[in-house]
Length: 259
Image (cartoon, rainbow, N blue to C red; front, side, top):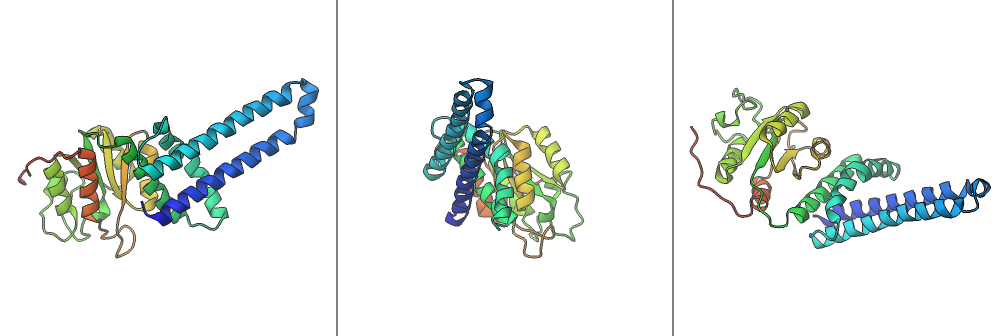
């Protein structure tokens, strides 16, 4: 993971924890006197409960940072991706906006951190059922072939990256699907029943896709947009191949001829 993206994520997550801690302490101090009137032990019970929550939160963030640095899961770090995906990321978007950090940068950081956590979880184990999930905008805009129903109809003209993706799917014997939007993408995932997904999309679609697919492991790869969003986009094939090699654990079958 690139250092700038790592720093953005770690900085935001630490700031988020500090803010949550400050708010929690404030919520405790404000009604402190009233709690004593309810029961002499009430302030201590509430304080202990809040302290436990804050302690677990700080421990979780510390384990998350260690996992990011080491690239390997530590202790119960397997649950940390869920905390990041479902709890911390939405909060970080709001805090980032208040701090003047663009939503796009935070989304890029989230995708990179998610990828690292997925890799830490997989850690060399072999994944049998892998789905390559691609956006329709990768296809050459003037192509008359409808590949969303069957990507293997691709004529392999080389005007877009679909040809290369088909070759990779055949080489590694994995399922390849092209979707026009989130609804179709979710249907493809349900049909393929993969153990892991390699998805290509823009920042917005990747982050929402990772959240929708959790707890299914998703490695996200940002697309290239030389002509702007959603039009004749591209992808670095070496990144897709590397992700496939990592998840497949070295599995590589002879390429099947197009037919």
